[in-house]
Length: 200
Length: 149
Figure 1 (cartoon, helix red, strand yellow):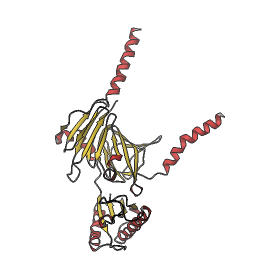
Figure 2 (cartoon, chains in turn blue, yellow):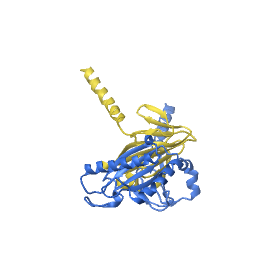
Figure 3 (cartoon, chains in turn brown, green):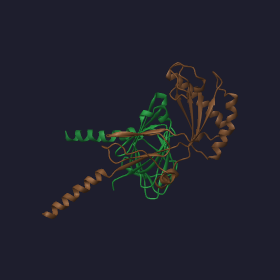
Figure 4 (tube, chains in turn red, blue):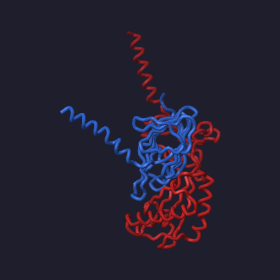
């Protein structure tokens, strides 16, 4: 009987330990271009902000606030995360094309970018190209969706004529929903009237 | 009566599965090493480069293994060995103003670089660990979860 109680107690302790054994570590690192953003790590007990390169914080359980913010060395980061870091896909390359107002003709500057797009596509052996059309906020949402789609279709035709494989191109429209420059509604902004070619 | 009840139950169970099949892929596998798997519903499948990922998929890696995923909005996620993450929610429809991503790390190590969803609607991106929520302002970070064996 005493034995059984022992086993029972051990089980309880094991379960309790298991419930507490999860521990999270979050480390902020610079983006590929060197820019450092910000993350907040929050639990029921509080939150901590990381906003400098290689700052890290540990969370022991969901009730307690995250621990002290500390800066990790590159070696410490490597020793834990080298494999996750090595598995990161190469970031996509994004080219932006502009059209002459009210037409399906590219501006001279954008025409000059086309050979570079083809070159990057080939050098990366990409089989995953997304062409997305964008408008500014002048006009109805639905109208802008169709307008942006027409422009991305035009850009796709231009790319195919230059030698891109149409079977790997996905043509989409973001309408007025993904502006390069944020504006209020009904604002003419030439930089938002664009097509993006994303080589993934 | 019991039959009708069972029928209703069956419809309730299978309907979400049917709806899921119509959904758009949310990303693609771009790198793999060793044993990388995807769990979709009751199915477990090995992941190879170019495989499509869908909302609600679980991604898992074995020992000495890793996987890298590029999402539709250019979010970059990679997992180190013995890791597991669930993509609970992923909506990328900027033309309709619908954007959200909820990823739940179960165990292991991960690297995360936010994409367009993070730029356009940072409050709609949530990265969860068993005991914390990571809020993201357009950035790259690493996560390690020492899970329970």
